[in-house]
Length: 306
Length: 306
Image 1 (cartoon, rainbow over the protein chains, first blue to last red):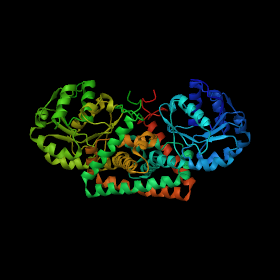
Image 2 (cartoon, rainbow over the protein chains, first blue to last red):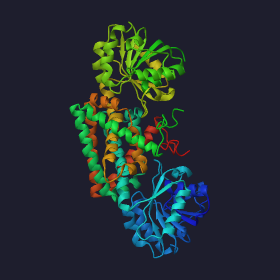
Image 3 (cartoon, chains in turn blue, yellow):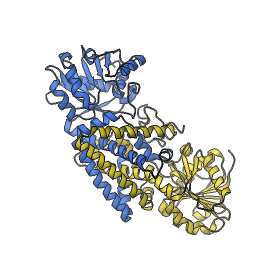
Image 4 (cartoon, each protein chain N blue to C red):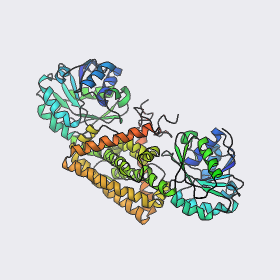
């Protein structure tokens, strides 16, 4: 792999940024990677574990002279950070982000982007339930999609370069527009997360079943929900608030369908249930065929059993 | 490990029974294990892969002379199978099952249990999204709970022996009554499964997002849901129909909470969302501490990335 940018600046040093750093190093994709985090504790941790070639005490210092600046902060903080660093963005540089919502980020960041800077929003579809500077690892993006959401009229060479970086970090890359991105993600990620959060909250609230029972006897279904519901609270608050319309639309559909299945249970309509469950099983097969997951028989049980 | 039963009969040869066979062999827990499946194709497969010491063409043949008979058929089929084998159950033998619902199984099976046979319902909290005779593996029950749900007045020695078998297969064992079991499982397993089925169905129905997009870009949340929603349709139809009251109660609570979170999104109440998500995160920590899952950082990503 050859070097794609002379200097990359990562603003915000959580799971995504720290994984980007290790993936960039693995591929030799940048000459220098600078980093900045708002919290001093995070910066100290980053320095201690060797995260970033240079950890800076201000975002501006990290950004100065960078060919690529990636905003890796919660969606709700993107606008303020963009405003802060705008004056020091190098002419010809690319400004990107990794937010899970794209329309809102474009509205918040675009007004601050100086003439001559290429703004190319991006969203890597990768993550774990962990967060913070120590949670990153180089393989996070391997065989995962990264969606680029360039605004109209963006320089094709700048897009190609950013694409090469993500490919160098192991991702497949696709482009789509921001509206469509936000709807697709509401279906595949945002609504499922809210639902998982809700179910875990219900379990905890239910006084007729003790917390320790819920935890001890958490079978496959619930265990998976708790993993989803352990994701970073700040990030997810911002996702739901900034992708409100699409998320509420999908949740509306979800509630409709859930009511239909509840009615089938209440009326004892086994055929309806069986047909529905048979149909959803086929969708899983499609996901495995698409290489987005494995069908290892003990998948989901982790290392506890080995 | 020493032999606990001379002969064990497994009726129904799906994921649980096949895993029991391999776990019994691993531990040397029984002299002979016989097996029966209703479908000839399943019996042929079992013979081909060496599943069971002897595969029989009728349930009665498999049951004759067995010290332990385990019903491993869908919950809706338990009653009929019990009725069929009742005449050949050996006096002093134990009859058990592995159904996910216990009140219904007790109602369906108990009337057929002959005098002198110990009926001890059980439920191993273990599974994968795969089914059928080839899906079993010896480690399935390792470090998982198996719940025994003995009816009042059951012989303590018979319970102790069944407990020893499950411990020999790697499980932790606990006892609880049938009502409580069905409520706990509605929270930790049945409701989450129905919710996952629903969300996967919604995604597939949504014409504004193509199926291929849902599959290609399925991020962590949705991917986990599809795994849950790939579980055996017959088994799950029976679970919902036979644990109707507890499941509907939990789904009612779920809907209430979901509406409250939807309202928080609609009104932009970020504090409510943040507090809720912070709280659910702590539950995940409890599950990891209880040893029911791991917190390996790339957990959930399977072998695709390695």
